[in-house]
Length: 241
Ligand code: HEM
Picture 1 (cartoon, rainbow, N blue to C red):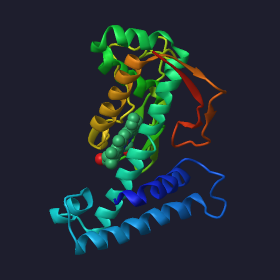
Picture 2: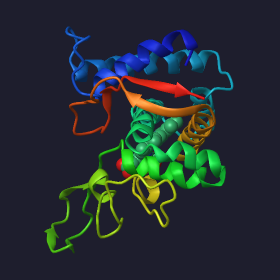
Picture 3: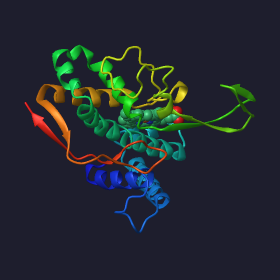
Picture 4: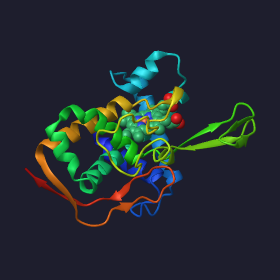
């Protein structure tokens, strides 16, 4: 999307999916989501007229997707990319404050960065749950599900499962194995996982090189949402090297 529109779209996404934001007293979250869809509807019409090398034009040029499919994919990429990585990034600063040994350990051994990134995704778990519909009667973990029943998997709970992760509430930068579900699983596994990993890795690398410590200016403010696990505020100060 054109750079001039980005701030507005980020604000709308925050409002639509991040719980009620008091800055938007005239618009409900559902209306904010409609605004996003209207925006993409117009952008798609624009790109049909003047195709470029961007994602929207590429999806249209593929020819296999209906306009509605392209619209829903635009919405999905925007939400998937905005409402998750930001909270993992914020959580990364929280981790550096809660577990002060991490910065020094990564500075001493940057070879551990990839493992440290996986652990950021597990510890922060920004995507709280995924919804599926049972395709047949089945039993999982002693619970019966009938065909057609909606089933929610709580990823943030699974990522703290003590049967799977020792000391699950601890951030261990070198945790191994670390088969977390932070990016989901199966055919809908996160499309942007590689990008999110690059962003988190680069931030961790730079921070471990350039910062000595992170401290909190005030208590973290958590978002009121059962969709996204994240922060509405995390004021920190950084002790630069
Ligand atoms: C730390 C960051 C991220 C986390 C924790 C995360 C988490 C997830 C999860 C759990 C799913 C699976 C949803 C399901 O199975 O129903 C998913 C799907 C998806 N994610 Fe991410 N995501 C992140 C970053 C991104 C980024 C940066 C993008 C885009 C640039 C993105 C785009 C998507 C899309 C389009 C899907 C849907 C894939 C499909 O249905 O086939 N995500 N993500």
